[in-house]
Image (cartoon, rainbow, N blue to C red; front, side, top):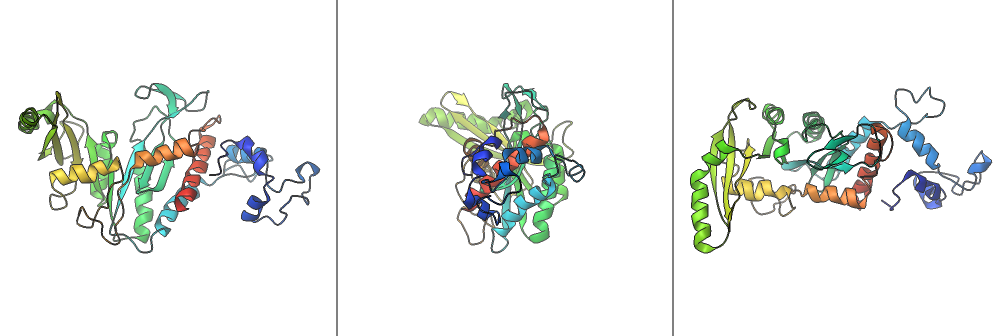
Length: 350
């Protein structure tokens, strides 16, 4: 949060008496340190933080050199607890936005794989936000699907939220990379709503044929982009376990067709096709409006906000060094991602 991105920067920070006061040190100048080489430094050196990166809870108590270790489960719980504590009373509804991004690697780190979409060696961290609140930052190897581990994280987060807010409605939102039967089936079983992008195919495009023709004619007539929507039931031939509601956006731009699809378990009473696509699904790209108890377009008291999770990820990666994953092990790099995540939480709280 202060702009120091690497462990060796802590060799400067360890001299800071203000930070020593904030973390509860009594010897604010370090003059009473036992070892002579530590005197004048009230805080730990970078080597201590390096031991924190390398230590594990299982071995810390018996290891001579790496006696401290991070409790990753406690850190995960804390991210959600801070979100829950930010509300004076439970909201009627919250949106959880899931997204994956690339974390480019420039060394031989553990779990280094080439990703074809991003065209680089990288990690593929999973982020879950609610509005501007960060609930999960999970470092993953890039040889996995974008949605890998999402059900486990949702099960953990939703369970923790419902323990405090049993009546709050929870809806997840994500792009087509998360449109997987396992995620949708879990949501349907656990009374969680979802609005997910759906990759187009020939069957879906044929189902949207009349609407696309109408949009094309309107575009040619006016010279401007035209769109219309279709609300229909759809099931894949093999990968889906049941039929689901799909919204098709038939859009024609000057000289270009632009069909898009989303799948949802929200009912038509919750939102019609156009409102669901334009105001609910597209809110994941930019935080624009409040999502009301009745899926209204106007903000109401006690309502949670839509989310631009992609912008939040950029803030963390570009401003708070979330991409400084240069340690040799995946576990150590996950700890660095935690540091960045809690820096984000501090600044967001401020």
